Structure formats: C-alpha cells, structure tokens
Amino acid sequence: MTHPMPHSGAHSAHPAHPQEQQTRHEHRQHEHEHEHEHEHDADQTEVLDLDAEVLAEHLAFLTRWLPVQEAPRHIVDLGAGTGAGTFALLECFPEAHVTAVDSSAAHLDRLRTKAGAQGVGDRVRTVRADLDTEWPDLGTPELVWASASVHHMADPARTLRQVHDTLAPGGLFAVVELAGFPRFLPVDAPEDAPGLLERCHAAAERPHAAHVPHRGTDWGPHLVAAGFTVEAERTVTVNVDGSRSPAVGRYALAGLRRLRASVGDELAPGDLAALDRLLDPVGPHGILRRDDLAVRTDRTVGAARR
Image (cartoon, rainbow, N blue to C red; front, side, top):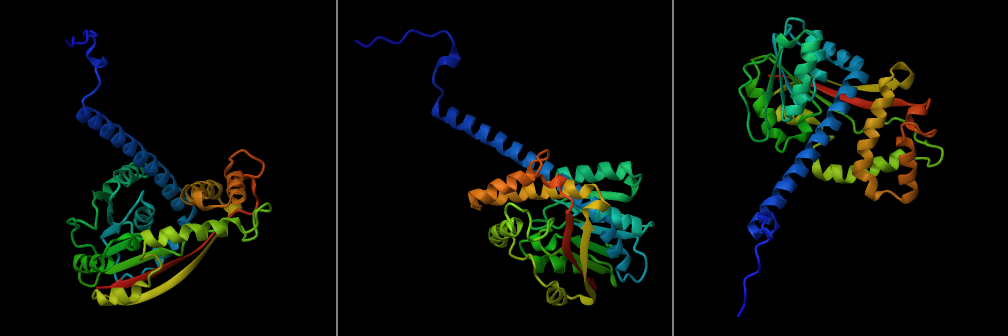
C-alpha cells in the first residue's frame, strides 16, 4: 500500500504546476525585456540629446536654408526623437507651433521636459504614433520636417504620399539624412590599431543594411512619385572639432559604446581590446583624453513642395 507523503506545512514548498512555471517564466522574460527596452531608450535619449547639442549650428543653418514661401505657423516634426529638429524649428520660426511625432514615449517625455525648461512648452504638442501602422490626425501643417526618420519606415513610399496629403497646398516637406555613422577620429587612429573604427563601421554596415534597407536612398525621385515638386537639394559637410565643444567627447563615447554593442562579437580580439581601451572613460588611451577628436559626416537635405 502506498502512503501519501506527509504535508510539508508550507504551500510554496510544493513544486509549481507546469502552467504556473510557464507563467512565471514569461513574467520574468517580460520584465527582462522591459528593463532592456528601458536601458535602450535611456542610451538612445543620451545620444539624441548630444546630437542636438553638437550639431546645433548645422541644424540652425538648415532650417534657415529652407525655401519657405511664408513663415509657417504649424510645423510637424516626424520622428522627432528628443527634439533636436523641433527646437531648431521653433527658434527659426518664432510664431510657429510644432507637433512632434515619435513612437517612443521616453523620447517624447524628454522633449516635453526640455520644452518646459526652455519656456516653449505652449508651442509644442507631442503625438506618440508608429507611422508604419497608423497615421494620426496632424492637422494641415505648412511645413513637415523629417530628419533621419524616413529611411526607418517600412513603406517609405506610403509615408511620402501621406505627408503629401497632410500638407497644406503649397506646403513644404524637408527630408534630412545623415550620411552614415559619424567619424570621430582620423582614419589611421588609434595608434595601437590603425583603421580600427573603419573596420567597426564596416562590420556594423552589414546588419544595418539588412535591418534598415532604405538608408542612403536618393529621395528625390520618390518625392516626385508621391506628387511633390523638388525645389532644392544640398549636402552640408559637418566637421565639428572637439576643441569647439565639450560635448563632442561625450557624443563620441556614447556613439562608440553603441557601436561596440552591435559589432563586438564580430571583431578580432585585438580590435575588441583596442576599442575597449578607447571606451575607458578614465584610462590613458580613452577617447576622452584624445586631442584629435571631431565629428565628421555629411548631412543631406531635400525640400519638396506640394
């Protein structure tokens, strides 16, 4: 005769039911994913804020260059991030209000905080939306600005048509793109691994091309196909010397940390060690201690009219 096991007195001592174990596992996995997303948003927020600080002069130049017929009163910033374009546009057009659209709640929270601190909170409206799945009511703006955002769309052609139909008649659409990841050091640096960062960029380009296939697209023909008339296009060379802004070092460090996270597994051991020496914020070979730091890239802009 088989006797029952004596009761342990504590319900939690019993093995969990398989369904309960699965539920607990899914809960822990969800918490881990949430923490990872939070860390990613925090890292991305830092990079976007530094991008705005380091490239502020170039953003101001581009907003002044836009061939607007009359100063716009309502502007939409698509893929606004933490507000680099939003604040440049508010500065350039002091009578305008900006609707900032982004899919990240963390970025929009940061944007609203910055708007309040700068005293322009009453001129900014934020809209959280994934433009690949929904097109929110954005009113009828006279200017739509999209900086480094159109190439992220799953169907850019559809997005361009939606922008065209959203704009007021005669309104302007500005598409701004960075020509790849910025360069922070001369091509023959660092001394212990010449050409290291170019190898890192090449390693990052392969998966990036697969995940963001529209990056580097010439948007001119696509804008025409969507019904726009392209009025002006230009490329602006960005070259910000590290001595001009203390933010350049922080920008380079944050950018290279993200680069390491994406390509670390693909680098040779010697290159990985050299990259880690650059990323040491207090080490003698760290990027923050170099006197040849700069931000070098090209920024293209196209202005198209409905």
